Amino acid sequence: MSKQQALEALWRLTYGMYVVSSRAGDRMNGQISDALMQVTLEPPRVALSVNKAELTHELIAESGLVGVSVLAPSVSKETILLFGFRSGRDTNKFEFVDHREGVTGVPLLTKDVVSVFEGKVVERVDVGTHTVFVVEVVDGQVVKDGPPLTYAYYQEHMRGATHKNAPTYRPVPVKKETQKGDRE
Image 1 (cartoon, rainbow, N blue to C red):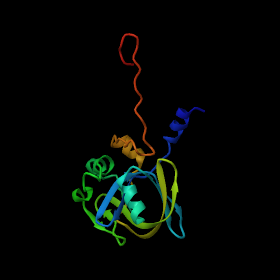
Image 2: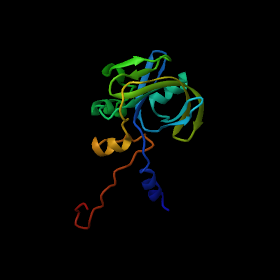
Image 3: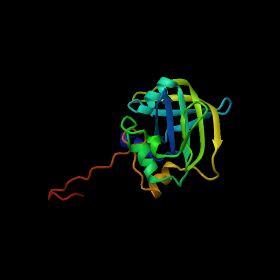
Image 4: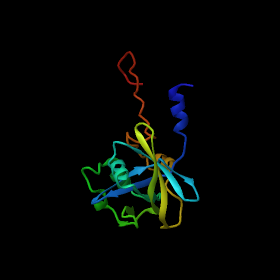
């Protein structure tokens, strides 16, 4: 099996889509993520993979606090672009969306989400370009009934793009030129 075949197989995994947030002192940020899963029921814990280059990673590493807003399919493309493609180093993203402060102080979205939860980091695993944070959930709330936004729905129905730092990033294949200079 080639590396390309392995990547093709991985691109068929399914994921939810979330805004993962954190706060350290007065600084706060959030980013789109699909690399999150529940790993235990008792105590309730999730594992979250975040690229080390991201501001959200810096804030989580500093404070040990994580917020997760589980996006609804009704979320606007503008919200996804804001949290997925704008840097929190240049923009206070939460100035542009409805949100509230959770019990840990992390920002949580209040619009176009099916649920929110927050927790404290209990373990970190360095996996190269990313850190996997294991987070013990300390509070959560179902905001509205309905299914969560999935990565497959985002790709197929919203024609969504993926940030190059995401573990699920899929480069667009470059078309080969023919002998006549035309692209295939």
